Amino acid sequence: MMQRILAADAGGHHIQKAFEYSHIGLAGAVPIAALSGKGSLLQRTSDLVMGIAIPVHMHVAMNAVVSDYLPKAVRGPVRAGLLGCTIVTFVGLTKLNFVGPGITGAVCGMWERPAKN
Image 1 (spheres, rainbow, N blue to C red):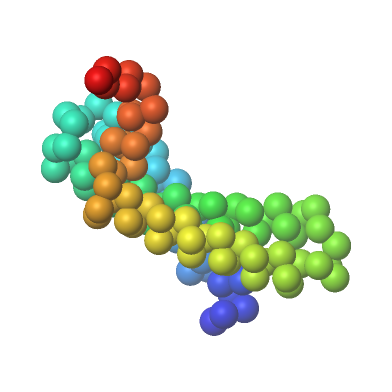
Image 2 (cartoon, one colour):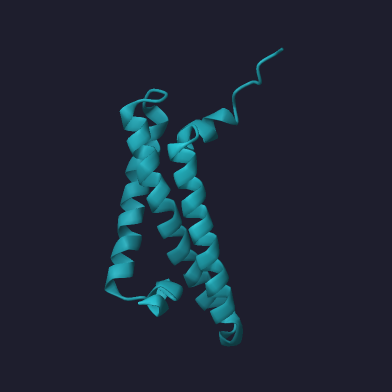
C-alpha cells in the first residue's frame, strides 16, 4: 500500500479514481467558494473539499512529473520528500480551515487593505 502512495501516478485504479474525484471536487468547490457569502456554510464546506482535494491532486500530479522527468535512481527519495510535502500541505490546509479563516478567507485576504491604526 505504501508503494502505491509513494508512486501515486502508477498506484492503480483507486489512486486514479481519487485523482479524478479531486478534479471534480476542485471544479465545483472553487467557484462555489468564490461566489458564496463570506463565512457561509457553503463556503466552509467548499473549503473543506478543497482542503482534501488540493493535496490529493498535487500528490498524484507531481508524482507524474517525477516519473516523466527524473532518473530512476533519484525517484525514491524525491517521492518520499513529495509525500512529506503532501502531508504538510494537508495539515496546513486543515489547520487553516478549522482554526483560521479557511482557504477562501485566506486567499481573499490577500486583496483586503490593511486596517489603518
